[in-house]
Image (cartoon, rainbow, N blue to C red; front, side, top):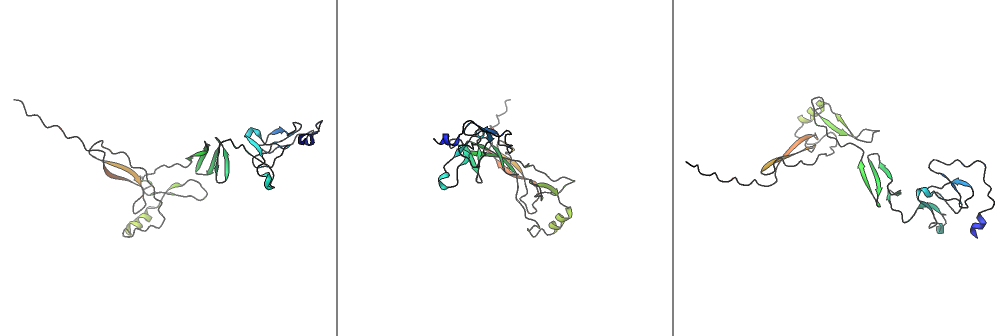
Amino acid sequence: QVCAQLCRRPCYCPWVPPRCPRGSPLVLDGCGCCKICARRLGEPCDFLHVCDQSQGLVCDYSSASAGTGATCNFEDDEEGCEVNGRVYREGEIFQPSCKIQCQCLDGGFNCIPLCQEDVRLPTPDCPYPRRVEIPGKCCPEWICEAQDQHLLQDARAGSPLLRFPCQEWGTEWSACSATCGVGFATRVSNQNRYCRLETQRRLCMVRPCPALPAAFPAVS
């Protein structure tokens, strides 16, 4: 009865189909009569104004009892993930920030960094590299500080205070250089008094080396 009241026969549709916003395709209305713009996620919907089924959207009447009307939403049985109050579809790629890119997978999400975590060691043309945040840029960059600033800090070696906040950074310790006995492991870190990148070493031992067999007596 409701369908009979909403759907008129024959169809009377405008000559020119509506121009839809980007991402909203032309579809037939609920009566299968005229072409309309499919409703997108979060937009109001009803029997006539259908949701974009190509995006897996259905008209959700669960909130209609609260007086807010039905809206287009994903089906309940479709997996997705919610990040910062926004729902993403299964397989959808999104960026919560400019530094990471994530993909919705199996109800959760996997992320990869977009900023390079490279290491810049001191060189003759840049003896004091430091990684800093640049205004207007997302990823931090390496800069070369003037040598006289560090000479001034070296003169005040008795004070561990720096003129800038030091954000600790370092790589993981490498594998031990010896498979048995004492060896050494290395890493690159700025965890020192002057917050400078340097190659650090420490002793390590995976296991003791087996004892050498006793020498056989010489045979005359």
